[in-house]
Amino acid sequence: MKWQERDDTGCLYQVEISSTEVKKSTTTNNNSTPRVPLVDLFAKVFLPAGYPDTVTPGQYQIFNALQAFCNSLASLLSSRAVLEGFGVGDANASATNALLITVLQDVFSRLTTIISAYFVGTSLVPESKTYRLLADILNDAATILDTLTPHVPTFRVPMLCLSASLRSLCGIAAGGSKAAIAVHFARNGDLGDLNAKDASKETVLGLAGMLIGTWVIPQITTPTATYTLLAILVSTHILLNYVGIRGLALRTLNRQRATRLWDGFITSGHKIVHSPEDISSVENLFYWHEDRVIFAVNGIPDRRALNITHEEKYLLCVDHTDTVHIVLKEGHGPVDHLKAWVHASGGELDHFESFIEALEKKGWVVGEGGLVTRLPRRVVVDGNHKKEE
Image (cartoon, rainbow, N blue to C red; front, top):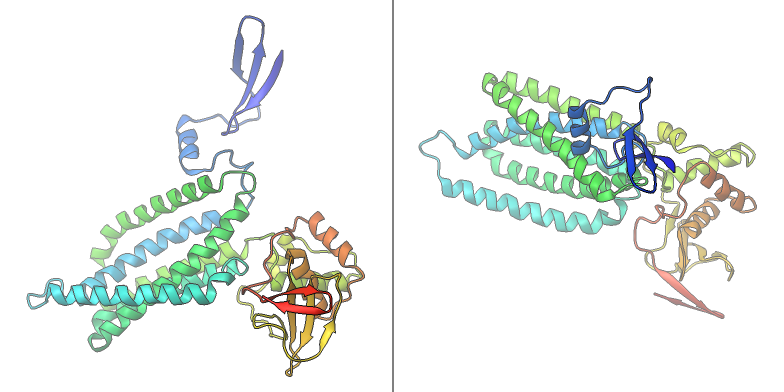
């Protein structure tokens, strides 16, 4: 008996099984690139198992790793500035004062983490691209504030506290959004392995940035040189993140993608649904939509209802400002959210089923909800009575 098997590095083997032994030999291919043991080792250490078959195609991870290098260099500049502000090298500086400032920073950081997690926690996954870019903007803003502190001694403590809060916001935004992005890339593989290998790549490049910084930073001795280098690093950092996130074609639906997809479907005469790549090229990273349609979080508004049917898993109600409130019934799901959003936005539902089929054919994941960014109030319909939960 003969067959071929492929290992997680892509190497193809010819296997022969007889009644007495099993023989395994490497299959040669004149068109294949020669395998280098060192390259194989690096692939196993830094790439997910089964790469590239287990990972969604895309260049985001490359840009994400490069931005870690820039951020590492910029962090050295800000760390040096903070130490100067604490009085390193000054005989009159007090270690106790530095400790108290550090404690105050930690207090602001922890309070910001708690408050921001409450307000934006449910929006991180649906708007992952926005929050991923916002996280790096906040981090760079904190880096700039830290670098400025030695030159603004009067406001040094407030600026350090503000930078600590900005870094906490960065941690919340980056943590939630990176989790959603990781799920996107872990197509058929191990999500934990992908995250671990991604962290390994960032660690290596961050370490490289620190090593290079130990030679570069001592050469930067004037404020002009410091801020020039900082401007270059911050600009490059933001640019790399923007390019990487712009090319990220997520397959899940949020409010902006759902609206663009439905509009394109209607405009084409119910024939065309755009692919994730098409939508990614035109969607806005910072999308401020009008709140004419919202999911009800405070129960049923005391105004008229647009639809009262037992078949659908939602109710549409209009308040005194003509805002349409989507009230979800018990047992609702992601498809119900999309249907309610289309209905509330004025769309006709005659072609909704064909719209869902076209979305799935194009690779969109309609079974994962991303339209509801806050926990909505549900209603339980029992005959002619409605009960809120």
